[in-house]
Image 1 (cartoon, rainbow, N blue to C red):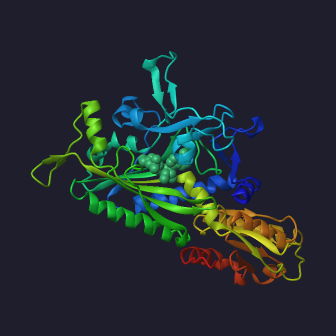
Image 2 (image 1 turned 180 degrees about the vertical axis):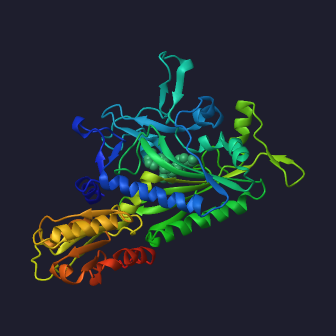
Length: 450
Ligand code: GAP
């Protein structure tokens, strides 16, 4: 994880928030490569969940919601972690994350000092809206995006004539006052979720729950994730969230071990029932095709962390490889024999293709710039003319760029260029006029070789 954190900073994927002031715990900034990666992961999820499903539509609800929302959802009462402090060293722990013997003996796992009693700590960030800081002005930063979907479910049925079963997808920020934030961007106070709520008739919920488990698993397979690094974990009765009847996590084998990546939850009719109760509005679905039968739908939720997916994709892509140094048409390479490479799927890579002139002189730079300009319309491109070519390839490997195009003297004569593949380091010569089509084909048929 240290290597990934340091690469992420060095190459502009992720920076510590407010670093010049010593950093802000639980918050991170996404740099030029990081925002591209995050956007592409979000776009892949969005395409999968909306474009490829006729029965799912999108939504972008506000982060600030009426505070009654969180009473109805049960978050005010139940969204807590058990907290203990050490009276001696002031370390703070989640009581469910320290050894049982320490908890029962009230002994700090770090210094052996005395621990306080366990107390409940609500994870919602509270603030005030308007100038008066009193209880009437309390408002919360949403701890999940899901509730924005529930409160809009009737609007969407009416505006878009949706019929059950149907889903609503949303990507957005969520905030939790996490007690322990470690492991880089894994668990943070400010993060992004990609959630889809699927509305079904009670009685069909278990079937749909299994169906969505299958679909979400297949999604990661399609994304090219190492499948032996994924597994299911079913929540036991003591792990289930207050709204869930059944829940499975998709766990990923991160450098610190198996951890949750995404949850698939059967939330029953809990949320819509509670919103009916707290808002006084009728949240029943009226089935026009079935004698206007009325019922409160059940909800199957797929809830993935976007920022946690960024970490997963970084970990999954990271590789170090011993290679022979590369030369290009006699130009010297000063690259080391070890290369660090991010083997991103080309559809997720922040830069798809880098254009590199072998030399700056003799019109090669201008020709390379022309080629870049043409590719720019369809691909995320980079241009680099600084340093030995082998070193430039290594820089692109480290950024996860799947393709490099090198322009040399022959390019001037016959219009061909070298196309270099990140994973195999293979180089082929092709006419520059064929580049765009070839890249499109390579992206479509990409198979990870390592
Ligand atoms: N709406 C249901 C829900 O929020 P959750 O299991 O609490 O369920 C869903 O969260 C996903 O959101 C998790 O699988 C994880 O990927 C992400 N997530 C939750 N808390 C997070 C945090 N503090 N930092 C980063 N990602 C988080």
